[in-house]
Length: 254
Image (cartoon, rainbow, N blue to C red; front, side):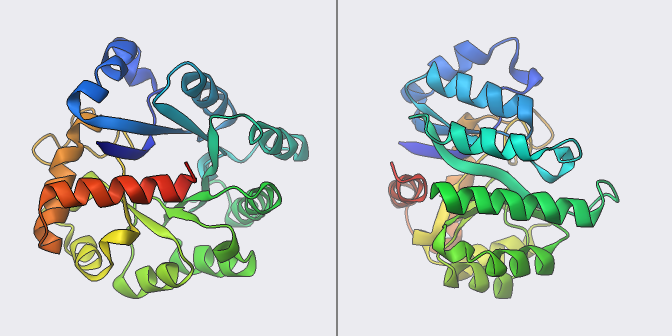
């Protein structure tokens, strides 16, 4: 069975067929899914989705693009959510410098605060980091994130940066980008890191792999990622599925 460690099925793009799609996952080889919060509302939705489906878990957190209205009370709310049985992580949280807003200082403030919530509740973290390699790593080291554990979602940096995260005990989330023709850097990372440090993810509805690039993504596309990993690692697809399933269980302590 495949473990999709990062999905967004509460996205509006699934409104027409969400339940039908999710109901067919196990029959098509997808055993577990983690629905990831990215805002206050999507975090609420993620918990509700997880609590109504046996094979779905939830991560609770606020993406850097949605931190502008956060309050200290929201941090207590996130901490309280971690007591729910189906909540397995704090995320996705981090830094995103691709756009100028929200400002970097504000992003850092709420990233640090959510890392603190994770440490206080002893939950693994799902890290979002785009165009912010040094600041993300520096803040995670300052927060002793190696003691928290987690995954760097949609990993997009160099082998050297991958080594830093492996040294902290983090997993790297690998998805559809690995199949893109221009993903040379990511392919080098996957060749370099141990299979035991890789978890599979879709980030659906985003980042569908080739041959479905540009279409709505879903967990049913993960066999294309499995095949790409198997070719780069020189192992059969069944081994990739088995090891990444075990990795997902370890990541989320299931």
